[in-house]
Image (cartoon, rainbow, N blue to C red; front, side, top):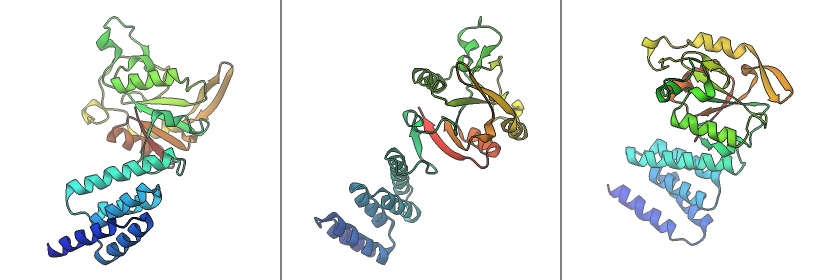
Length: 257
């Protein structure tokens, strides 16, 4: 306990220095002597203040590894996520594992290389309107709130006219285009009792050639496996696992909205 108290006192002494670079140098020297997670976290804070984000990320990651208490580790994880997002927003990195991007940031990606994947939802149009046709285009059939919000965003921003292609991972049908008609079903990827789409079938589907409309009079034939950048939108852990099994070589980005 005495060593911890001494470390905190020395850290506060460093932080009373006025020049940011000297504060950091003082804290780094203290960290080299103590290998203390809380010191590493505070170095990350100091680097973040002066927008040296890569160095901040490095020390936040050290802090997460070294901090003994769960609450402190969670603070480090939150800082890591914040810095990763800022690195993408500032253009210093296109992709960092574990960072979450906003829907608006999707528009910065190259649509010819980028595929958007969103999961199906248990809420479907027939629960709202029992008189709906037996088969409805998937984009209108799924009525989960986050799916619905994404569809509205996609339509308002006319992402398809801008060349972006998005597909839906359905537990029953696999990878389907938004205009593909679907019927009523209750199948979940996380429940094996429902006999959901298999991993092998998904792997085959990504290799199939499909026709995509990229304009009013423009069609292109392309496999979904040909996209090397995948944006996962509102995906659960089970959806992520299935998608990554099907696209083992892709770079993954996660978006929420």
